Image 1 (tube, rainbow, N blue to C red):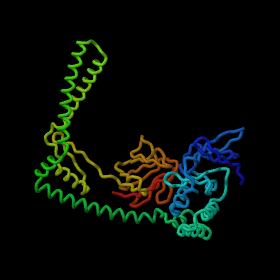
Image 2: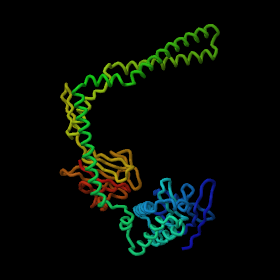
Image 3: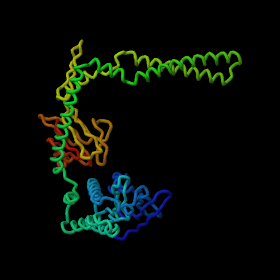
Image 4: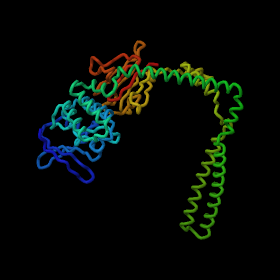
Length: 428
């Protein structure tokens, strides 16, 4: 398809401009709101009665400038992620432009593509043509990189693989393959950490039993806070004394010479200094009011030992005999992405979403709804429920979305995909 396209520069920004000929609704809305960070930001402008796409390119790095420095296997793995993101928003992959001129990189060297509804070419053909273009562009001295491109191109032609087969080729492991490995790794790490913690606690308890009072005195004597507090007290007292002298001096000058503005300013500054010094004295003396400032490490160790044995702690009030029960969490979500944090499902009816209101854990990312998923207990099992999210949930690759298929019972090691973020469920 012949496109009426041009590259222009406006001030500090650069644009790829294409004349718009098709009537769009859904695709235009996606492009206009720039919902997907893996696509170039697009504006719609009207010039001489004609509408144009304006794709902003100046904020990204050209792929052509860095293609010879990128690790090809990692780059194509990122490219497959882009394909999945685009498909998850019901956009046609054939409208993506795969060539060195139209592809860019963000700050993390992840691909950013141009989605052009006016352009249409089968994505598998584009991928093969793109690899051929890369082979011609990169240096032949880098034999390892050139060999990968040739082998990957041959694989695409002979096998005609789908997305999962390409992932396997690029060693982007599927959820089922990673599940067993991750579960075994988690068990080994937890057993080691628990054993080390138990040994440390035993040593600490033994030392505390031998000489708890001596250790407390040492902790108390070695802390540098006493010296800092003493210095703060001295500074505060000196500040109070100087501020009082300043107030007396400037008041006498006002009585002697009248309300001269320098005397007024000096008296106000002295009064402010006196207030600050008095407040500092009050805070420091109040902080040091309790003579027992050392850490009661024996009590903390005892509490930690109870938590390590996974016992429920009962706190009993001496007067009212009120019992506070701290329940064990239902389970945990171990992230596949190391940049994400582990999520502890510590309440029945635990809700995850990107909204700060009405959720127990805020999770930001592409394709995540305001209230996306809920975890709860039913008949002794931990279950999850889709909260009418836009993109649904995937449990081990099976999508949960709709009125009939919204709930699932979770098992140890199940892979849960929320938007584009993936987690492995571990039951406590």
